[in-house]
Amino acid sequence: QVQLQESGPGLVKPSETLSLTCTVSGGSISNYYWSWIRQPPGKGREWIGYVYNNGYSNYNPSLKSRVTISVDSSKNQFSLKLTSVTAADTAVYSCASSTSGDYAQIDYWGQGTLVTVSS
Amino acid sequence: QSVLTQPPSVSAAPGQKVTISCSGSSSNIGNNFVSWYQQFPETAPTLLIYDNTKRPSGIPDRFSGSKSGTSATLGITGLQTGDEADYFCATWDSRLQTVLFGGGTKLTVL
Image (spheres, rainbow over the protein chains, first blue to last red):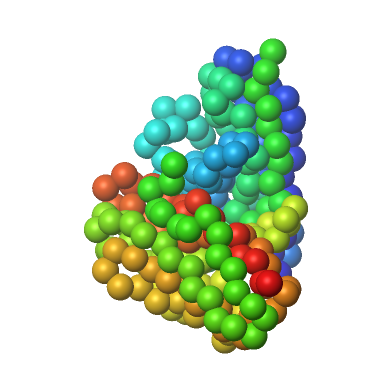
């Protein structure tokens, strides 16, 4: 069974870049779609985007100009970078994986990690 | 406010049946598959239903999904206290080109 674990700074300053990594265990990173999803405190979930093992990515249009999701097959990891963050980017960030091309069908989720944007 | 609308809470007695609705539009539920998830506090969500009606391996047949028009429904029969959790729906939106999530429904088994 695939297990996902997010890691990265829990505090990021405004205007800086949020960087998170998701480590995949129990499965090969070559076989799935890898996604990031976030949920601001007290608000609904928001899909950030996904990357496929060949590097193809697709992002939420509302975040597209600031987001990069990439895969490091040698480390069985994938990562999220979100630039020019503001307080509105404060959220629990979760990594996830899908075996299907249906991006809403998420087979495995990480526990999530809270990232706070504050000076 | 989520584009996919779910009731904030539902409740029923042990052994009874409950349904949870997820309402959307033609650009999302009306023309795309719906998935359902179960989430207990402080844990990662679990996929319950995909492709509107299918259950992943290991999910009991007490859980079922259906879709009609621009709404989807999750049904749970033979309720158990262990079913108390948050349930949310998800689907692709062809107009917005993004995955949408419902706001979640808290199930209480009285």
